[in-house]
Length: 363
Image (cartoon, rainbow, N blue to C red; front, side, top):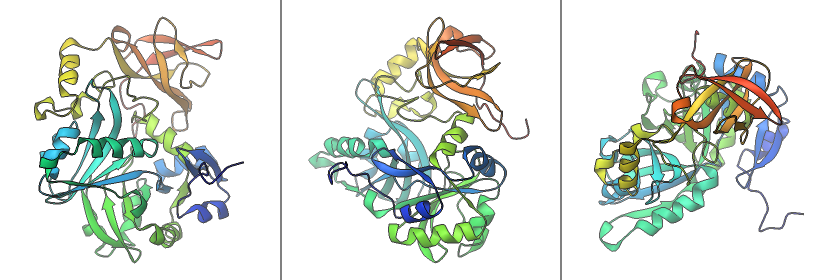
């Protein structure tokens, strides 16, 4: 039996998920919808072909503000924060001193001296503590936990922007582009609308007050969006080889071997930059590589690769109708076209290493 100390948290949309018949499961301390009655495949294809909406209110938010905000974030985040214009967004990783990845993050610049960083749900408390620990008296910065202030709805799919535009004051012209953000009125609610996604499809995220989320959710569904659970979110992101922290990213590995060297700008001197620079110069012994099964079977996290390596993420791709995944492989075997074998619960399955992304529209 759960005690008040161990009870799962619920988003402000919990009643909506329950009424829709969602299968609710524990996830990162939250009770979240993993799928709805139509099933994972139908939800996945709805996003690929039309439009779906995800409740991702379990994600965390940290606001950094003050005259020293830019310099502070430049010290913590791997990317060049100075490149974010007001109303812009940027992807980065948060590293330990030894280069191990604490989390991967999106940061939005809301004003000249005001930034909002979105954390992974399971890492929010750890990330917040890390941010707080790095503050020194001379920083002239304030770090604020904003996780309780926001719900987040991700509207994704080829029809997502048109659907949201129809509910937005100012219409399509007001919506921010890719890696842009804007404060807008959506379905009568004030929302931070962000053009960053996790599915390989176009769309936006809506960050808004939790109390406003149910009415906006209802408006999105009435306009034609279908609710989508976390299981389809995982199959969608894996088809386009987006990383999942805890699977493909972890403290024991660095960004170079994960293929995220592009978002690491060592010249900024971020925490862990020296270790990342050394790893880049030396070259990794292993690389995270995508693969596709050439026969039956579904790979899963933890499956061993025959001859060395381990699967970090695996699933049956609804779009490709074949088993797909990512694995850390010895660098010489991480080359596209390399044939590998994976031990799936005692059965050896044939696979081939591929280029990213595994799924491309029209291919």
